Structures are given as structure tokens and as C-alpha cells.
Image 1 (cartoon, rainbow, N blue to C red):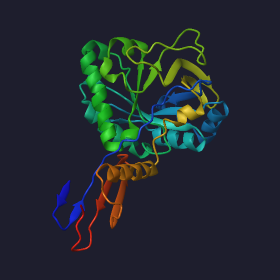
Image 2: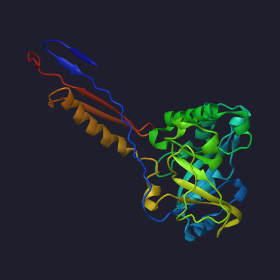
Image 3: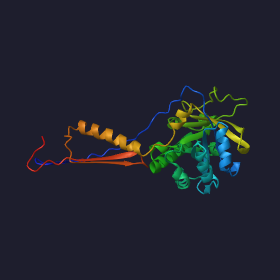
Image 4: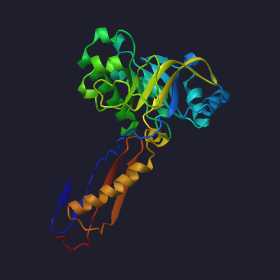
Length: 300
């Protein structure tokens, strides 16, 4: 917005910057991880240390379900996994089959796990797998539901916390449409004899996958009974690219945009006051530049 006269010029420039990276699969070994919930019981710090020692470098941990269930083991699990040196993120088990709105479920998820939707945690996950969704809804309904959920979490926690979407190959092929194809996919596909370090599961409408759950019947030291096993589509650096951004990211983006903005509108850099504000939650910036010349002088 510009307000000017022959004698003075005051400029207020506001921008919003979304800082994002395309996490392209790295040509490297597939890093190994797990996903768990309260069904694996109460895991101690020693248990999580054993999981890490067994070569599991990341974990997705259930936080919530629907609009009323909170996993009683979530906080302990994600805190202890992180202490063990495992990159961890929260997931929400979706229940669109119950008629819940996507926004209501996203609100519940953030209420339960919002403290863990910031650096250094992994991006959260929307888990779509419940039986019945495919028979009660079509591609458009389910795709719209996914996008509404994603957009609500982003509105509350910022673009770098956009959820990853989990679904199996059947869902990805038959029950969603191309409007979700740009989302980050964690695919579930359980071959009889998988080779998680070289195989590539079917991804339906999605062009590729970021994480692959290749069995629900795995075994890991530190966890009793069966456990889901996963691999990332790349190495440790690839998985780290899914960590939610640090707040300082926005500040650097704001500085760059300020310089570009000033140059773009031909303003003098003799600004008397420059305010750079960053929002860690929204990963956006607010730039304001007030250029007030001395009385009696005119800016051409």
C-alpha cells in the first residue's frame, strides 16, 4: 500500500513467504524406521534405545484418532524416541467413515500433538486406512477430505508442518484423485517377500513415495510382538528434509524478500526504520519499511 504527497513518502510493504523444499528421493540406501501406537504397550527409554541400536532411525507415532481418542502412550513414546536419537513425528488415524469433518479431526489432532509439530520433529501424518471409507465415499469426497485436513493443519501450524498422507496402494489407486497427487506419500504395501532397499511399491495417483511401510509383522529389539516396519526413499539427509523448519528460516526469507521488494519498486535504501517480523508457526514473514525524508525534501 502506498500513501504519498509531494513532500513525504511512507511505504508499508507486506509479504507472505512460504519456504518449502521438494524432497526428491536420494539415490542411496533406504533408511529404516518403525511406526507404533498404544498397541505396542508402554515403551521405556531403554526400549527406545534398543530400537535405535537395532538400526531404526525414524518413527511415526500415533497421537490421536477421530475427534475424541488420544493415544495414552503418545507423549512418552515421541519424547523417548527423540531422546534415543530417533527422528520422530506424530500421526492421526482418520475416521471419515464416522461422518467426522476433516477440519474437526485436524483440530483434534493439533490439540493433542501440536507441541510436537515444530522443529526438530518430523512432519505429522494423516493415516487413512479404516475399513468402510471406500464403500461410503467416492474419489472426490475422500480427496476433498484429505485436502481439507491438510489445509487446516497448515493454517494452524504452518506450511513446513504440512502432513504426509499414509494409505495403501489400493486406496492410492482407486479411492483418491489427482487433487492429492502433490501431497507427500507414505505408502503401505506388504509383499510376501519384500526387499525394502530396492523394491518400489505401487503408488496409484501419486508420482512417487517418500516412506514405505513394507510389513505389519516385523520384529524389532525393544518392542514386544509384531510391529510395522518402514523405509524412507533415501538416506538420513532425505529423512531430515522432512523435519519441520526452525523459526529462523522465516527471518532469512524475509530479509531476501525485503531486498527484492525495495529493488522492485525503486525505493531508496535510506530507510529510517525497517521492521522484519517472522512467524515460526506460520513460516511467513511481515516486512514493513517506512521511508520518511526530512521535511522539505521531495523523493522523485
